[in-house]
Image (cartoon, rainbow, N blue to C red; front, side, top):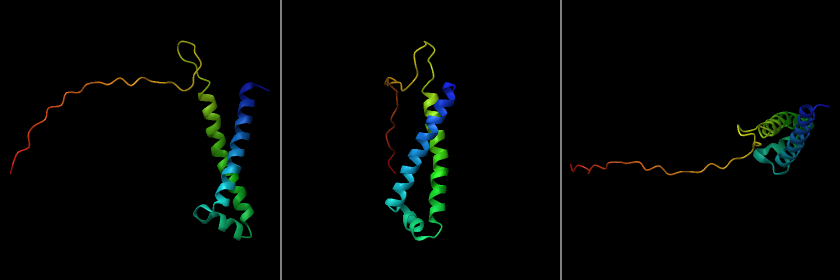
Length: 102
């Protein structure tokens, strides 16, 4: 299997795992009454499955994008990733005018 396809499959598995934990957390802590609605309804299982699927799609896409963007190479050939940028202070001259009295 090509490397990119296996990376995608791993990202989907991780994304759906995170979605399952996220949905379980929403139900367990009853965020905004979602746990009560899901556990108190006769079609709550369908609602929970929809939460897992839709959140899984989003979390999988984010996981895959994060991994692909981390594979980038710089112009000097070094591997990409998080970079530290130096914050260089720049002096700015500001003229203060005295307030006029009324």
